[in-house]
Length: 286
Image 1 (cartoon, rainbow, N blue to C red):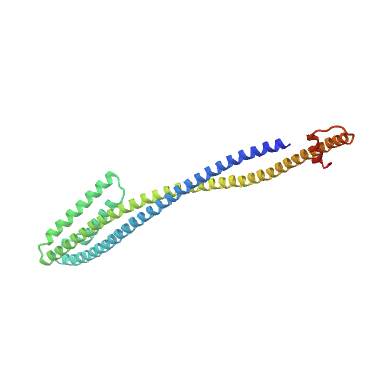
Image 2 (image 1 turned 120 degrees about the vertical axis):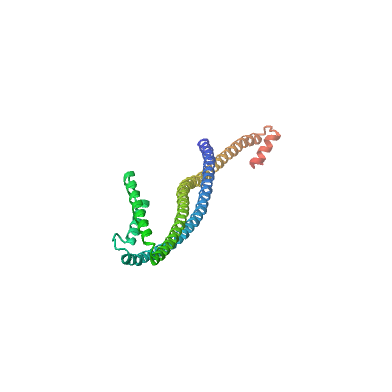
């Protein structure tokens, strides 16, 4: 029985060593996963800071573009107001009739906006371009006819000046919008990178949790195995002590038996040796 217990103890000690190696390996892996996760989260934080900067620049440019658009629209209102004055003047000096110049101008702007924003077939876009060209030609021809009048010429000059200003503002607005779109594209790209980094960080965190749980389970087994070894060692020591005690008792019994034999010989007057005398002494018979 003692041999089997010793064999079992040796087996547990080997299992304990394997468990310690497994736990340490899992803790090492968990630490690596945690470091990688923290590194990715740091990169996410830096990327979000960059995205915030891009957003701020985009919003600033869009705000400026909006201001320019409002100024441009305000100029268009002034132009429309001047066209109304122009049409009143035209009616007084031009008896041939025809569409008001303001309506022609509005129609041209409406068609130009449609050309810029609508999705058209090649045929429809060609027809639209031709329509705009025709209206422009009509507008310029009528202006040329009416510009001979001094007041009309003055109003036309003011309208052209305002149109140039509106065109300039529109160009500035387009440049700002284009730049804002570039910042928006950069912001979107960074956010996509953030999503990917966050996904990787989440994966690293899941692996960290799994490794830590496995390491904790291995550690719990280590504690139990150490306790089992300690308990088993107590049993082994107790059995060894019991066996040693039994051997000692047998030796004492043998000593007493041999001493009695020698003592009987001594009483009969038989010759005994020095070793026999020492044995009698040890047995307490002399």
